[in-house]
Structure formats: structure tokens, C-alpha cells
Image (cartoon, rainbow, N blue to C red):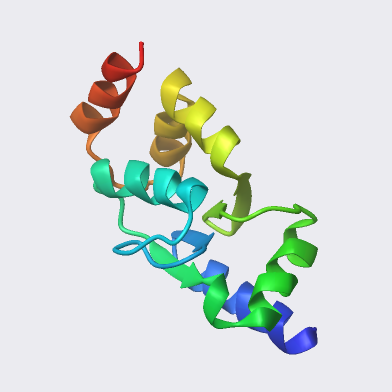
Length: 120
């Protein structure tokens, strides 16, 4: 597991935003991954996507690394933020905007507002 843990650490430390997901940001392979990638893509967030279906060690390793049982998992500036439900709630409450602002992550504020309006 050390190799997977090292790889995960290197990935989250070398990218401002990382999404561990099933599939890729352009072709998600589960609804939950699709939702989070869709939010990030719509908001114009630059993020690294890691397809856990391509590597069983990473798929298992990320769950142990974060002590979180499900995929997707979002990391911002090296910190675990949460999975689909948490990211959805944070998007709708504006907390995700605040997190991005505090960490210098560029995103489209108008797009974030449109998501809230559409779900309000």
C-alpha cells in the first residue's frame, strides 16, 4: 500500500484540485463521479482527475488514505474535502466558493451562482 499512498500524496500535493473518481472528467463512469466532475467542469475549475477504475491499488488506497469509504473524493490544496453529497451541499450553500476563494482556486462565480439558482 506504500506505493499507492506515496502516489496519492504526490498527486494531491502537486495539484491544487484533485478528484478521485470512477472514470475521467470527460467521461465519468458513475453518477456520483459525474455529478462532482460536472460541477467542477461547469464552474471552470482546473482539476486533476484520477480514474480509480484504472488502478485497483489506488482505488483501495484512496479509501484508506482519506479514511472515507466512497468514491468520488475531492481534494483542494492537499486537503480532503468530501464526496458527492458533501460537495453537492457545499456547492448549493456557497461553501465551495468560499473554499476556492480561501485557497486561491480560480472558478467561474457566475456559473456557481447559476447552479444555486437552478437548484434553489
